[in-house]
Each structure stands twice: as C-alpha cells, then as structure tokens.
Length: 460
Image (cartoon, rainbow, N blue to C red; front, side, top):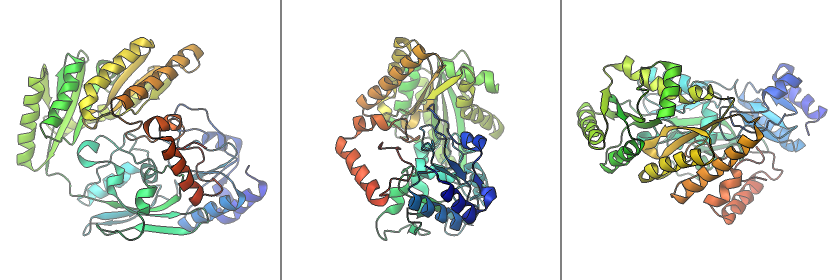
C-alpha cells in the first residue's frame, strides 16, 4: 500500500530523518490504548512544520494511501490504529503554543501540544483551560479535539468542543481550510469547526486550533463522601443534581476501585467503603460555601457515613491525583484492561451501577467501576486476560450487554472516548441506518478516495 515512490516523496518533503520505515518503528505505531488487534503501517512520518503536514496529506491522497494522524495514541477506542500498510502521521513535532491572548481570552496552538503543559502555561498567565482528560499528562490537544475529549470537570465546564473557537485544517488535496477564529461570535460560513470536533481524523487533518480560555474560579472546596451502600452513593449523585447544584467535579468510585487505587497511590482512601463520591464545588467564595454546605447536607441525608473535607490544597491534590490514577491502578491487576465509556442520563446512574453489578456476576468477571458520575459518564473497567479465549468471549458478551443497558436507559455509546474502531459496530443501535449512510456520504464527498483514517466511526 505504501510504495517506494511515496516514501521517497516523503523524504524529499520532510527530510530522511522524519520518515521512519524500520520494522521496529512501524510496530511501535501499530496500536494505541484500545484493546484491539494492531495493524502495522507501511511508514511513519513526522512533519516538523505545518507546510510539511499539508504536503504529506496531498502526497497520501495522490497515491491513494490511507493516512492516520496520531498524537500520543492515548485514545481508548482504536481511533489511531492505522490501516495495515498505510501511513501514520505523527504530530509530536507540531507542538508550539503560538499565542495565549490574555485580553481576548483565547489561545492558538499546534495540534501536538501536550494538554497538561498547555493548561499549565495558561495558568501561569492567570487564566484557566478547563478540559482535563485523564490522560492529559501525555495526550495532545489535537487528539483532544479529534476525539472531543472530556474529563473530570465536564459536569460544570463542559468538554473540549465547548472550548474550540476555530480550527485550521488540510483537506485531502492539501488545501488549507480556515474556520472560526479569535472572536467569541463567529457565524461565517458553514460550521466547519463543529464538523471537525469529534470527527476522529476522518474528515480533515488539523494544523492549528483556537481555544477559548476563561478566568479561574476564585475559590474551591473539595470533599470525600464515604458510603457503605453503593445504591445510596449513586442516588446521592442524582439528588445533588436535582437540587440544582452543579459541582465542578462529582466522581464515583466503587469498593474494588477504591482498594486498588489506595494500594497504588496510598492517598488515604477508605478501603472499607462500599463507594465514595469525590466532590468539588468552585466559584465565588460565598457561593462555594453555600453549595458545599448543601452538598454535605444532601450526602448525609442520603446515607453518607462520613464526609472528609480537604483541609488544604495539598490534601485536595493528593485525593484528586489518586482519582486520576484509577485507570493506571486497575491496569496493574490483570494483563488486559478493558475500560468502557457507557454514559447515561444522570437520573439513571443508580440503575446503571446496579446493572453493572449484575453483568459482572452473570459473566463471572471482575469489573471495577469509577467515573464522572455527575455527568452520567461511568467507566466500567473489566480486568481480564485476553489470552484466555473462553474468558475473552465472556468479556465481549459483557461489553455488548453494557452498551445495550446504557442505550436502554436513554444513554449513549460514548461520553468522551469516541467511537473509533471499537464501537463502530454498535453505532446503528444508538442512531439509525440512515445516520450511518448520511455520514458515509459526507465522508465520500470530502474524502473521495477514503484515505482519512479509514474504518473509524462509521465503518467502511
């Protein structure tokens, strides 16, 4: 699929050092964080400037070579697994923060900027970039936009799409397309910015991103509510939202996850708790005090046996770091970790958690559940060993049932991880056959040769 002539063209456009054809390099980019079969690309290229990126896209289109753009490869739905023999385009060298504008509250970045580094740079300027995917220490902003990534603060602050003011991207002919930009209001032309967010690299190749920034909250208060009953904890989530309180974060951990995380992080989590909620409210100091008091009252009214309020920033950060380590901690337990992303309306959280317990028992599997309960986004995490064929079949059946239950409860296949390869087979269950055909016609019009990240979202 990747010819010697195309590799030679890449070398002329990018320099030989930025064209990786060795077997070890190609295998290194044959998989991502999803539990899916790897696919070895024919070549890996690393543009070092935007002009080079545009040349790569055009060369791939001219040659009919499948192209998959890759940031850090942290996505969990197979969005960066390439087509066998195709081209992987790395964005790691396109990592410049081009501008942080403190007057108009926006930033311009290249797609390879690491999310956490960007957030820290913004914070140093006295501003705030809220989206905080769990992989932010290594994930890239381009990947966040392509997957419409979420995070712990999604409940109050929204997800990546709520902060994308504009994008520049290349179409398959290597033409630079500009949409949106520096202004808060911009309705010029079709909403191509919206089209690109969450498109998982199937419709264009991002080269520059304009991101909205906001003032940081003046105050915050974090607490841990400890329950000896899982259903009581999940009902408390619904009660807090029903009381019209919107915490910045409202996270759920079940007992298995609590014990596993504590063993990993030693953050002082209560290992005897059946479930706990990590809650943080922020905003004006007076509102924070009022909301925190209401949340404590609701937690106690719904059966919390203890509430621990963080005494200072260090204690708060220790607990949140432990929560962010949940996936890493669970991944140490078994050779294979299957983290799902089923999301339901917040009022259905108790029903979903109960169903997950039933699914774990039915299929005789270990499932640790944690997640952003405040926005209905749970991460049931199955710990298994894919080499055990019989157990793996039960895992696949359990995953099917998890999504069936989520959809039956009015939920969705993905709250923040995208569809990629992993969930393309389920898409018609949530949408319609017409939705898939419409999406395919759209892609066909923009990508006639089907080179842009083939197979993702709507299949082939």
